[in-house]
Length: 445
View 1 (tube, one colour):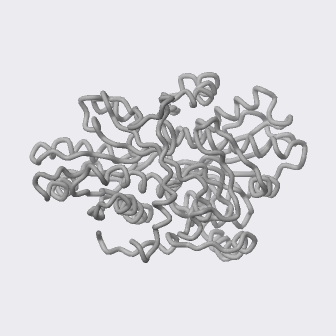
View 2 (spheres, rainbow, N blue to C red):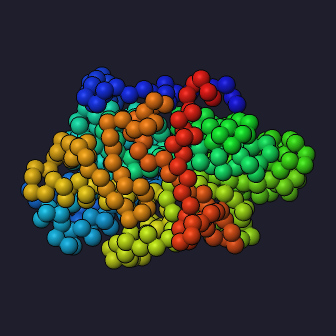
């Protein structure tokens, strides 16, 4: 471990439902105004209809064309979903207009996106990605705009009163991966970004390892925008092979730069004893496995945790139908990408909220009121039934909005991501990480 202190946002205990909505919003909202003078850069419209009185305006943002993580499939999936809804007459006669914004992996840029959402009067930000929660949640809280189905890359998404996550974010993925590796790994090295989001990873991963009776991992920092990782690979391998005869594990979790790391790692590992590899979905997906050699590539045999079933699971057929119908040939949209999947689920939640509102007024306030007051959203078994009570079982450890802590463990076999374990029906076995995360407090880590 590096000895770094966790960000203050990590262990954030909940306020009461009413006070937490507004108390910290005013000061943070004011601060955001100072850095958000330019509102239009990097933004666009992916609309399924012309704007008008019968149009529901939402926004989706994600980083595109950056040197670090990129998620172009998320706004593309949002546009496809809107076209699909609109081609069928909308929801209650209302069509959906999707505004998009390039988050650029930049705190100021995403704050601009959030301010534009407020100024444009969107009713929700849906299915988006950013690692700068403090920058965008402030203006969203100040404007009362719900944030539905963020990617879960920071703990802020699991604490903000305007956030409605559809998955367990990094906490569930990392805790689930640690739990899955505990029985099979000797020394473990976690290679993660030297960033605010990266600082939150080691305690989560270690919680899973410790739940399985394994010591904490070595915490190895790396740049999340490097083009090669030869020295980082050497350090990781030295740590994972420190106990002869006890096969260690190297766990790179560097987002889009995981491939760069593994390219260096593949060359470096020939000089060391064998080790296992593992990571989380978002750092590795099927397209990356294919591009790096499939069964002959560096990921063969690697464990990968995901929030959802494998992409081949028939429960994804409804999403794939939308993609085939409205975005056939759009190579930005990969049905196996966790960002695309999350955006699809987030828009499923939006659709359910609008259907509940019916012919009533649609605004940010009414959407949030609907989400807060008993709405339960089925996703065809892709997740548990989604709902967001005032407090969840994980509120005591700083995640009051985390309502779905399920993960699936996948493994690369024959170059394909398949379920590591299946139930009698052949579906991915689900692991609920709630009990592991409940131990995640300063006194027990």
